Length: 150
Image (cartoon, rainbow, N blue to C red):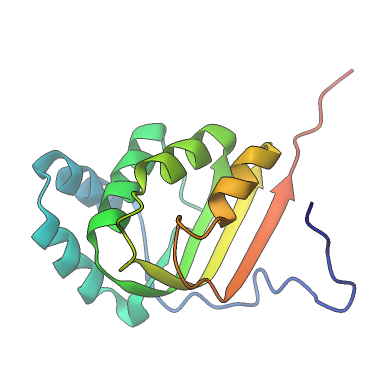
């Protein structure tokens, strides 16, 4: 179980993701990288990103987009300063964590931000386990449950 420390305020919104903000064109680029299966281009794109940070804030990703993102992260061979994955559903977390391979030890992340929408304990565990991304120093995770109408 995760507990919130009463003296720590979640800085979500106050952490500035000094990075390349993704839009629909960038998602298309990730899809093309996935379709081409070109690992060299993944590494070139990752190295070109400002501050080695990736911000998906306010970007809605399909399940296929998540698959493409995980391919990119798997093959980027990058130590990320900041990954803001924005909102992920349980199914998206499952795809992301299942497709990131254990041989991606080169893929490290200092700061991970994510909003989890209606996820299970298992998904939270998979997202935070060491083989997902190595060397996470800070993790800001918002667990959000959509209320059910009675």
